[in-house]
Length: 233
Image (cartoon, rainbow, N blue to C red; front, side, top):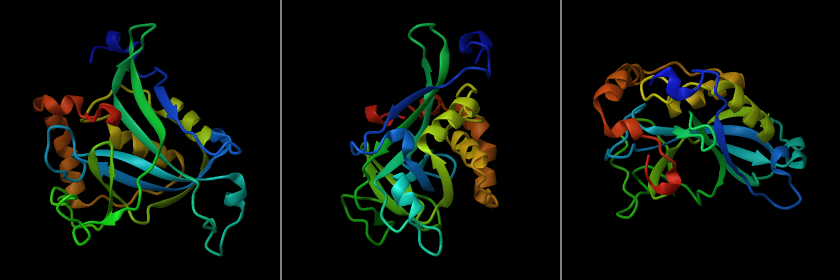
């Protein structure tokens, strides 16, 4: 993408859709995020997911300050989260005031219902065959897609306000399927939160190497991460 189309290259503050409504006695900015799980769905135009060739997000368990202060012997809150917050990077949007493109991030409260396990709890209305992966996930339905979700995820400790600030400072590069896509945005955030990255599996290294080629030849994948609310990638 020409730099002139993206303002000053990598110094653009992202546009953040912040849609977090909680109980009236909890200010959204005070929510404390205590666990993060990677979630994936298929890219628009594909009928399968294949490791990094998927739209991926972070799903956080959110707690009130009071809940976060009451933990068990393992450091986990004793009560269930009051909300689940999803972090997603979409395709760049055009600033209506300046006409310049800027990164587009959504941080929103989502309701995933009761997740079901891949394969053995799936039925005709909840197919799971498109997930080409040997790992075990939970699945849920959202925005007209079937998603996979890590079962355990990683421990984090950050307020929602801090997550927004991190996003503004870290996610500033133009969207690119091969280098700066949804997968890369969530890895930037997790690294900034001090979460150690798991060793890359062989299939992850292969699909990561394929991403630039996919970006170059897959016209449909160039719009892979449109807002989910439109049921497009």
